[in-house]
Length: 215
Image (cartoon, rainbow, N blue to C red; front, side):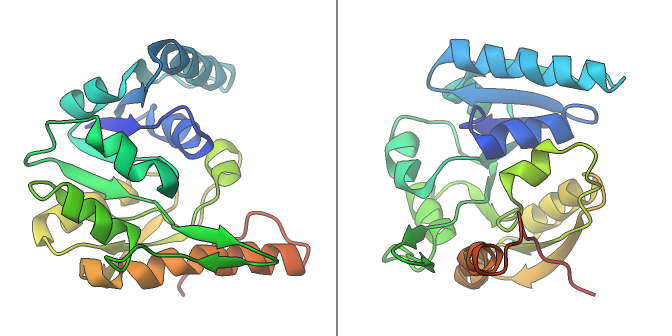
């Protein structure tokens, strides 16, 4: 499967590329192609040191959209609208949103847009795409630590059953992640709001990169 990562040179994008490249064809996208190429080379070098081969190339964000079967938006919430305004070709694409709108004062808090969640905003901006919420509660450092088996649960939301099923299968192909059907896209606000909770728990209890697991 070809996975296009828009914003693939950030912490989440680079970590996901490391996990995905051994079993999928990964296209790391960026506004700066040189950064994408460098991230791709770093991904392959890291895997090689682990004795693992992978498939990963660095291109621009538009190429990641054009080439990918599934498109992951690994971008901070504040850049969602400006990034998507520059891109085309999302028709009939499955678009995965791990985006969390988070604010910070003394503590982290959920700061959703008027649509209700980041995923619902993305669905409005990309009406001809199949938007699916997934991977919202996994820290960048966990993705990057290949020694971590990623024994976490992933809540998956979408209004489109076929797209949701495809993403759940995709989730299940990564380490020991377990996908769970969390309902329609309207539930995304609950999933996204778990992340600031995890950040506060980690800070207040001297924990690091807290995740979730349903048992």
